[in-house]
Image (cartoon, rainbow, N blue to C red; front, top):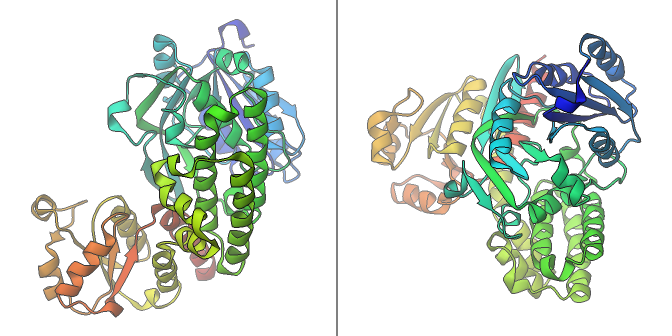
Length: 457
């Protein structure tokens, strides 16, 4: 039996109807090199055989404890936190999994440095016909903040917004001292918003691990991230967060960064909606934010840099707001149209730009048996190659390959690269732009590939 006085990490797994994934999830936690753990599995009313799998695994490992809860991720997490006996709290969602050394490596750091919160990098994971593809994401955008103790001033950590709250560890005492919980609203979407905001606001000592561990699945098309009801759920969760900040006497201090988080959330979700519902939901958000702007007295000129333009558009009119929400989305729309139509007939495709987006495109095209040609302006890459493949100068590639489609892969420099190709005589009809990594991963690599494989069968 587990000696609860020596539990170092309590891993909370909230689950409902994930029979296809739950065994891999729990096994990945059971197999941790850190043995002094407990595994708290909270079931929100599974009806697909998930619970039977959990109970069988529970018989094999006394560290597994099971609980029943309402169908609410927030309620499930809160039960797990209340029952936890570990010094630190880990979170593993039921369709995800973790490498065996993750909690041992992370525990050593949080313990030695007396941390409130540790965040590590993570992988977005997609499995296609038994082959696993991993795409790494950093825990922090500033490399100077990684792998050392950061003293948080309340705003520094919040400036990172929500970025993989399940990727690390939390001091249980820290969560208890500040009464940090998830909202117990129904369902499985976005209840983590308040939890993430409050932990990032209150944490005094934090650590961003440069290394990635957690494996976040993006090919489960039943996941809440794909729900069309997301805007209503976002609004509800932010209303609950506002209540929390008011109760804690922190609203006036943090309302501008709160508003920045709102804008980030709405923009992220609205851009991913199908066109038939997007217009209606943008109108809904615009009207809602206009009311909130007046009621709360937001200072729109002091929002986070990433939403400055969207905030300015809100000051103008609905047309400007909608245009800013959708800025660049036509590129994703055109690229998606290509993937679902003439793409199948092309045997060879040129990729201009071999950064992170270019790497994903190369893997995607090769998965679909397409020959790829890489081109980049970096002379070093032209000399060394990339992933074992030659990298052409754009001028040489345009000369040697005169008919194939060219996909410009850059989140920042796409328009400059497009103008460069124009000057080289490449016509508009040969060009496509892929400048949204999240859209590429979720809507193209995971979703389009999954649907494509179903059609093939």
